Length: 73
Image (tube, rainbow, N blue to C red; front, side, top):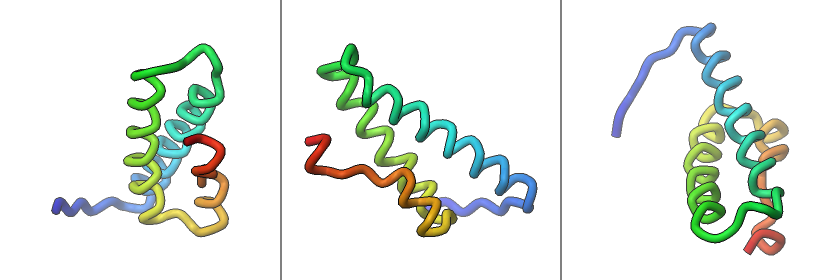
């Protein structure tokens, strides 16, 4: 386990970066031109970034990025 201390400005920046990454990956996952191993890699990365974001996002903000497993599996 690794611990990191951030000040308020750094927390806001990390929040912004993670949200932008999640948005980009959602766009890619909805792109029908992407398939196979690339889609699996994006899905795996999405799970990691989502878990990172879940550590400090509010439930309301987090629900925006929650994916329906039945739709995507």
